[in-house]
Length: 261
Ligand SMILES: [Zn+2]
Image (tube, rainbow, N blue to C red; front, side):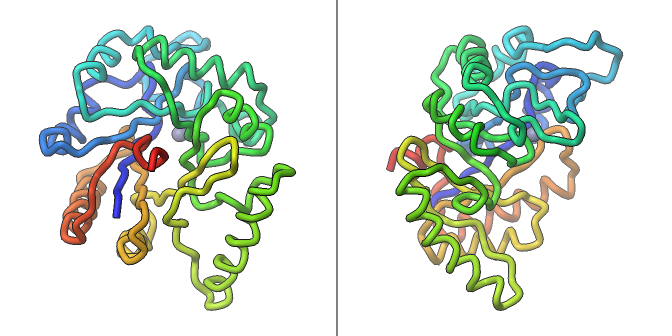
């Protein structure tokens, strides 16, 4: 089994000490973490962590030089793209709205400029993405890590979509009929022009069950954490998950490695 830690919402208002506080120990042990970074966060976004009053405008990632420098010298960090502004408008998440290809590309280019490396993975804010978003991500040549909705929530007229739908539906139904929630699908799904992986939230009731399932299937297990909403209790839960994964003989990998196999 391969394991991935994905941490969401790193942005202009984050500080190196936030990362160091919760992940310093894991980096020392050589555990990679994929940070989903918001390219142009706005203070009105639901992830604002600035504290003081700020002018309402986009804050580009590259403007936070200290965080960029920290990420550059830390070899166990991979940068993923997390939306473009992460803005929820009238209760609708950013990538649940119609998004242009230029907007997604603008976000990817900002992160590539800031961190000086290629960005290969897109994470939709709140794990929600509609079909226009999928097309925009494909045009920007990225793969997707999302929640558990892969294969059933989007529809593009393509053979691969139909094939995966026919595989996922009976699999999901087999759990639904037993009154159970289906686990996250434990393998990479190939939609032709992009690939997808499913993830658990650290807070999910069945996250340990999901780890055991991914181990039995020799698949990929992805757990999502949130840097700015950590507590000692949550960190303890992550540590237990890591210990259990090690007992299973799991390998912790950078997110992009999962898509190369
Ligand atoms: Zn987010």
